[in-house]
Length: 245
Image 1 (cartoon, rainbow, N blue to C red):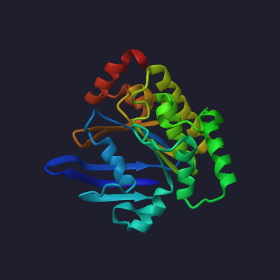
Image 2: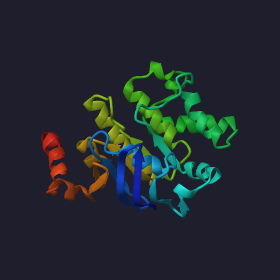
Image 3: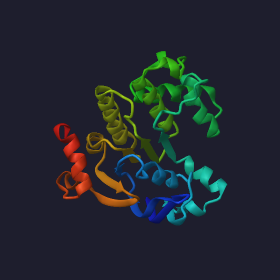
Image 4: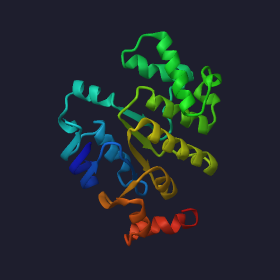
């Protein structure tokens, strides 16, 4: 379980998060929504200990993240797979090296196991061995995103975080990535947190939506509740994506 209690975070005089409370249960798939600059990514970075709150508590299982030392944080982060917004693949590594790197960082040295696991996770994201020697610059946007997802799941994480998983992709490729996320949720049984401003994606890939505005959590409910909510901000998202949901 992930539990956030009265979380506050400021950068200088700018208050980004103002007393956020959030609970994510084991096996749940949630989406954190909001306009640009509402603190979605800032909130998630507290969960993995990249940022520390000015006030409040962050718990992952039995670890209080905001008070954890570097050794505990390192151990905690091995339970997470993180798909960054722009992929964050190493440009100077080919696909094989990008994926193998995670296993090596986790202490695995058996080359046969590493290669077999790399090929296995590529198949899980609908890619094959032909991409192993390609570099990120040689991949399409959709393929880069798939490799990023493969890298995030290669060490069997308990939690997966998707930061704007369809940003920069065309609508058809975006939908294929959404389908892939649903498939992996089913196969891996991991607790999943997605960040997006795209209500279409949120409805498709999650069973619960959290909406942030001006540093506050202003909505927290299941998909049907989101579609029927009288919340003014949720209405604006529904009106914008109305023809597609």
